[in-house]
Image (tube, rainbow, N blue to C red; front, side, top):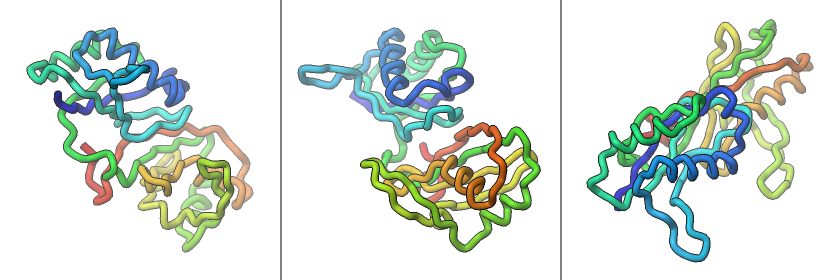
Length: 212
């Protein structure tokens, strides 16, 4: 068996598919593609899949990936990619496949592009993100609320014509969702809420290198 990493884009209407449903969807798509994949053993057998970083509901993803295992070492990765492309719907675009070069635990950061419906508060947002400290409350996995400082979790930011690009801590318990950053900004700076879109465009390792 060999482990391979599938890179894909999750766009358009597929951004409204939750991570749990995405897992089911990907399992069915892989089965439909008739790829020789490894199934877990035991009573409830299923295709082995390991997603790099769950994508929040409503976000588009341009650098998504999932690991699978092939039971046939001679099976061509080019053939595998073409089989997935033929079975995929419009808003899932398979880009490339290769053997994983980095372990999932080495993921450290993710880049997000946010665009606002109305962006007349660019200077205020820039001043907000340049603060030495931004305290806010975050709900943990067990529902516990704790106070955190956003600034150490923001690796970098860039104000754009329509919004902001953020590189945030990812892949750990300190994972930072960009909506927490923006919602905190709206609240603390008393900015009127407006519609915005989020695209995750890249994932990096702990050294800031593109995760592969």
